[in-house]
Structures are given as structure tokens and as C-alpha cells.
Image (cartoon, rainbow, N blue to C red; front, side, top):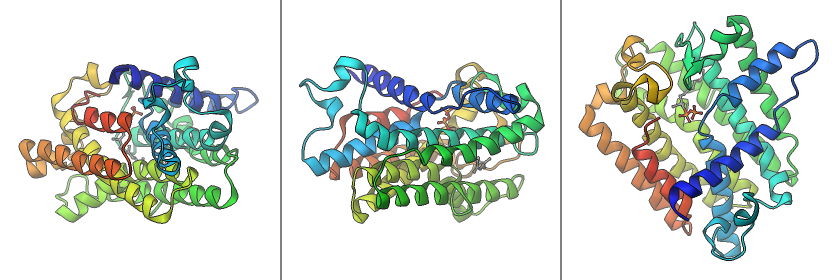
Length: 318
Ligand code: GRG
């Protein structure tokens, strides 16, 4: 199977799992349910839950000393039904995959608000606040953030793994993760950050959820502390590469391709990796961080699809 076919398989399956946990749009609070679901269903590459799934498969294969299912040419379930996990595994990790995408979506909803980036376009469609109003946009972000934990609680993971996974989900999303990174990003808008501050922003604002995705996938598959740490490091490199590529796209892409206005960083007065280090160095850094991440995956036994996905992200167009 070529990479594009595998990517289709993984993203369709991930999307199905994520959407299966979205709440019904009913009751007096229907508007907020619609606004929350709109922000999740409204496109999105599903990269974080997909990475969580790949990390789960990587550790599972390492533990079982066999190839990840999608790479195998034998009678794996994916070829028969487009399903990548058996029912039991899906009940364990599925709620966390959905929870991760909900937190990610809630961060995009809040990031687009007038008090943050004031963006009216997201994934080529009106951003949530632009469609539902600023009040409902704010509430939709709040609602999704909390519903993600309600969803994670549906996991059938065993006690210790469940507790560890929830702890990672909360801490990487919060003050010592994404919220921390966004705080510094907002405070330094219009000012020149130091290298350390810039690195802190990228590691936390963008990297933290990617780290959580890898770590949770690994924890649920039974990884030991060292394996979780290795994947946290791997994900940090991916997060750095991903955000630097995002900076490049903000300058080089088109609104049509990106699904949101380009040039928004400089318009907001943000110093990015690109403006700080220059285009050549930024492109080199994307390649170096990605190579570091792939090296860690290989050292843990390798995962064909994940390695290809990471290489593909170096030149992603949206
Ligand atoms: C919700 C707890 C909580 C806090 C919100 C506003 C905020 C705090 C954080 C903003 C974080 C942010 C927007 C970081 C940028 C990360 C980034 C590059 C997102 C784009 O990710 P893609 O390309 O998006 O995976 P799609 O559209 O594919 O889902």
C-alpha cells in the first residue's frame, strides 16, 4: 500500500473514531452543542489522534515483537474493513483519541477569538465565533475542553494506565503545557522574544499536545517510563518542526491552500522562527527536528506509516 493510501486509511479511521464520541445536538443548550461539533467536524487533518494511534501501535509491536498491523501483508483487519484496531483496543484508546481532538479544536476556537488572533476563517470556513458569535465561540471552546475529559473517562484502560494518560492530557494542555505557551506568545506579541522564549512558546503552544498524543498512545499500550520519555522527546522535535513549517506556510502559502488568511503572524506583530532565523535556517531546522524524531521511532523498532507521515509533514501544504 502506498503512503497516500495509508494516510487515507489512518485519517478516515481516526475521523470515524473521533466523530463517534461527539455529543447529540439536543436540549436547551443545543446551540453550544452545535457550535462545539461544528468546530470539530469542520475539517482538520486529525494529526494528533492519528499520532496517538501510531504511537500505540509502535509500542504494542515493540511489546509483542511483531510488525504494526497496517504494515503487515497478512490478513490484518484494516484491509477488510478500514478498521485499524480491534474492539477491545478501540474502547481503550478511542476515547482518548477523541478527547485529544476535542482539546485541539477548543484551542483553535479560542485562538481565533477577537481577543486572541481575531480570525474569521478556519479551514476555509467561518471560524466558530464568526459563525456563532463571540459569546457562543467562547463557550464552545470551554465546553469542548471539558467534554474532552468527560470523553476520556469512557476509556476502558486499566487503572494505572488510565490515571497516567489523564494526567498527561491535563498537564500538557494546561498551565505547564499549551496554555503556558499561548500565554507567553500573547504577552510577547509585538515584542522581540529571546531564543529561549521563542523555544518555550513552540515547545508548549504547539509541541505539548503532540507530546501528549505520543505519550498517551504509548502509556495505553503499556510502555515503560523510558519508552514514554523517548516518545515525549520524539514528539517535542515533531512539534518544533510542525510549528516552524506553520510559520513558513503563513508566508509562502495561499489563503485557498491554507484555509485561513496568510501573513497573519506579521500582521499581529509576531516574531516567528522564520523572522528570527531566516528562511534557509528555518527550513533546515524543520528537516533536522524531523530527522531526530524519525531516528527515535526507528530506535523503538520503527513504524513505517509514522515515519512516512513525519517525512511528509516537512513539505506539508496546509
Ligand atoms: C483549550 C486548554 C485550552 C487552551 C487554549 C488558545 C490556546 C489556549 C492555545 C492556542 C494553541 C495553538 C492554536 C497553537 C497552534 C498549533 C497549530 C500549529 C495548530 C494547527 O494544527 P493543525 O494544522 O490543524 O493540525 P488542523 O486544522 O489540521 O486540525
